[in-house]
Length: 330
Image 1 (cartoon, rainbow, N blue to C red):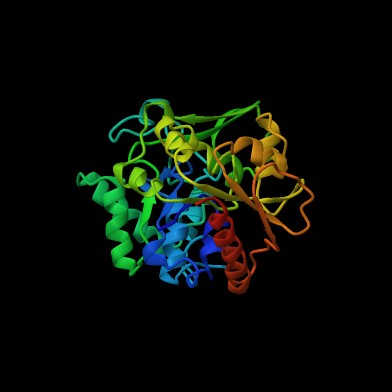
Image 2 (image 1 turned 90 degrees about the vertical axis):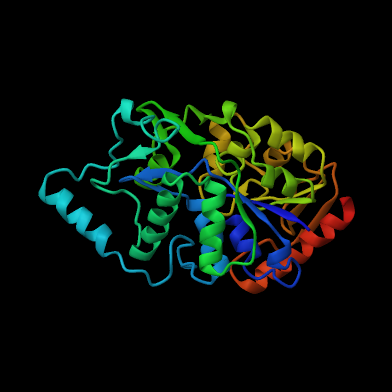
């Protein structure tokens, strides 16, 4: 068994064509939940859902978000009503006292459905509503995810990093913003002063996650700050990585990032936005997979390949490199 850590699109892309090397039923994925938000009363878990939809063969691989060919009638109608009412100035946070009302929700992740700022398809929304309904009935996020996984016909164990709420908060000169608001609604434009993982000090990885982390671990080419940061902010999670073989795939080629805001966020949080900075952040990693063109010299085992992940064939190639790196340390 090998466990992958997932946040954003890096790990789903890596596993997209990797079944021959890493059979899904034998390759659990632990997904970041710091990006989770509640919109109009339903819980959206982007990183969990990207992996679930990818394994179900339903992911929109053009955007790596949501369900392929999904309709967006509800989303469109919400935008229309907001425009008519003069309320199209989203994202609109619920009031402060509502951020912790009802379910135990980490503050600054609860949004009104007015001027909905994330594009949510109709079938995608049904997944979120089912998840939220199960949690309201008393199930944990882990239990709700098992139900969704089985309903989607997914073999792979997909595990939320914790059943406790953690919210990735980006602090800007304009005030704190949930990561999704900062990145999706505002395009990552406000300057970043610091990043907070709100709730992580009282959150714990689940027993299922700790069991999965007892096996060798692969960190996909994810954003070290917002995809891995919420996991590493939990002491027990970080401790588990110290005690098991870990291979990390760099999301950079030298100082060039493949996609997303990793470079900006690493620089803003005092890290070098480069493969060197990733290696410094991942002191627990025993080996790395780097691109052939990456000039970085690390004092740890390195396996090199073309780390582009545009096609299933790319995924298969990088997966074989990961397997070789695991052979160096496992």
